[in-house]
Image 1: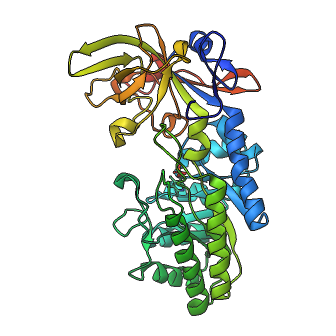
Image 2 (image 1 turned 45 degrees about the horizontal axis):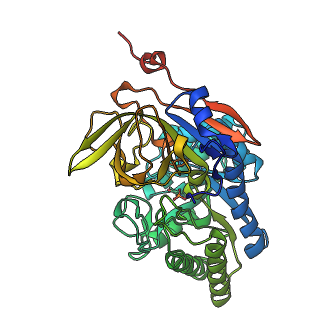
Image 3 (image 1 turned 60 degrees about the vertical axis):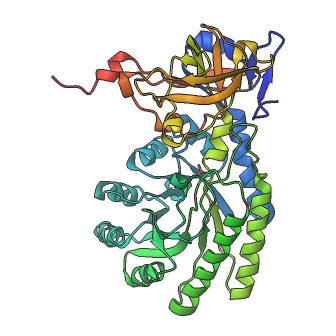
Length: 433
Ligand SMILES: *Cc1c(COP(=O)(O)O)cnc(C)c1O
């Protein structure tokens, strides 16, 4: 009935997540409130792990892309599920290390890492650094030399695949700030250069072609291009590629209009391409890495809000305002993203009211849903927005000096706070006067 299997309706007509009544959760913990179904998060981790077992005989590693949702608790859960970590900044790396993540299973990304971040990554023994460009390569080699280590690296490659998605989240083509291109020889040249440097070991290749992708073809095409590139590196440089990192980007269901391919199917088709191309090029099948973020955490999260004013502008639009908005979920204002949801205290009723849900920030674009169908609402009702487990908390801000919401995790029928609600004290704590 709803976009995710873990959402149900109880006898009181209330929405439940992981079996817990969301109206009660809102009352107990306050709103806005991020709620993460830890059991579903774990299950999503296992879907990828199982697929690696099945299609690559276990010769692979699933890296949870922390930028989707990074907290000490989610790092710990991903670690317990046997995943590695993809981090993109010193802050995410710090969080993963503090959560106890084994650093050899951490992969460090980013298109403009600072010296401080590179130093931190090398010193902490990060498994692989995904190098973005030549400037970074040279600095990293120097830092590794200074530390007396040889750092494993891979480069981020633009395979030139169009992933049929919102242009802001399309990153595989040449006009992108990320990585080095294949088509103009840039990628080959950088491997040639790295191969000669003493303190880096370029044993992998990486691509990430975009996000919220619903087609299998772009992934298959990218895998083929990358495997052929591995073949070229072997033939022309004698360089053996041991790891093929295919990035993330698997699409999820935000509304009933989204129709994602089952992840198992993606991986099966991609595995066929990897195996066929390996055979054709006479190379070994490398260890396969993938970096799902959104598809692990987004479906596991919802956000609860309290409805305030309802403004029915006759023949124009009906605005329903909530006590959060772009501060806790900036995806509408960034991408005009669509969401679905329900009035949690009327969850089983039909959604007959066409409304636009507005946040409380001083921006006209501060919306959470536009022309969405909800149950008729009134002030004091609880709104649940679905699939907010990725790129919500991780992208949250204190715009208008609004404190960020708390996050709770539900597991085995119990709830606990994993991120405390910010206070006004927190808001001013770094101010100096
Ligand atoms: C954003 C990103 C991911 C995760 O993408 P999802 O769409 O959340 O699966 C993985 N790898 C890299 C390099 C990324 O930039």
